[in-house]
Image 1 (tube, rainbow, N blue to C red):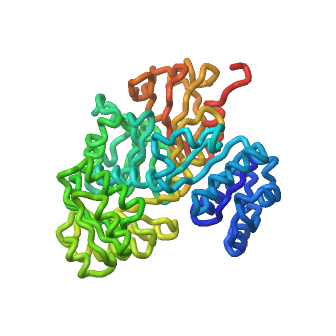
Image 2: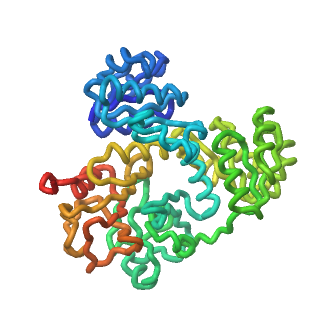
Image 3: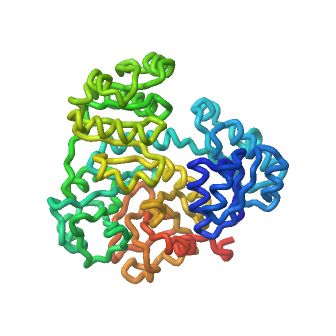
Length: 458
């Protein structure tokens, strides 16, 4: 595919890196010559210095032949105009825009992004997506990652297996026999910095990070099975009152009114605005790196410190300070992937990668076939995919035990109608089933083929 990306910041770089690795023809536009110089030196992409919404810049980048434009600059309005110009002048088929302001996304303005008005096919709101991910991590502290599929009826959990994990050294097939009513399937294992697709006779060992696909109602039972019965935090301190911090605080206030919540925000005007908008949250104006402010916010007695500022270093240091003051656990927002591998050594219990959320949303629309949802894990080493089976799919009508699945793919669940089905040897996939599977990066193209629309279908 020929793809144009407007914006060479952290998000744009991450998207360009992933798409170029998959041999797409990628062009990147940014007004910063230094950013364009960096991205073209490090990645196999073309770079253009200019304004992403200007017709001449888009023409120079080859918009007349582009299959997709992804506008992820820091400004909503530039992203919207870039998509409008790409549609009106160059007839680019797929237009994706990052929209940060919630004012544009309110439900009663839903017609704004349509072909008759602002022709944007997909809007990405990273703040909301990341906010939802933070809330899920708070609700299920035993999971290191948690993503929902199939109308939120099916969940992918990433779970660390410690030395006290009850199911260590147990063949996976025995787990199915021991817990026949538990709708959970181990689909992937991250071990020794490699992603493994397990087979029925494989065993889990201490130190594994296990990817489990389970029914939404079975999340807590699944976590308990792997030795995680951590209690949900009831005393929480949030550092950062920006879009993500406010979204999380507002949601907790509405959904979990018994939770004691305090917030630290450095900017005075923002602190006042957030305080006025929240009814039961105490907002302190000051630095999250100031121990006196931390003590005033009752961090030493908190169950959880959630650091959501727009500065990675602040999030790291505030998380470390919180633990030193006595806070039970911490969760940090980290944009820079170079920090991810050192979180454990720094004393950070868990982190959120906002760039991964945005990249996953983009991949959903780059993938061929009936792909409904995509979530990339381990820096793109594997993907959890929700795909819809059509009549022409080679998966339809054959019992699972007889399926000749390509290497590197494991099916975790099937969503049929309003029912969640756990894979068994006798099960047959039917047309219109939604299949949730785990695939290593090299097998993704096979997934696209399995769920593609055949020409005979028409």
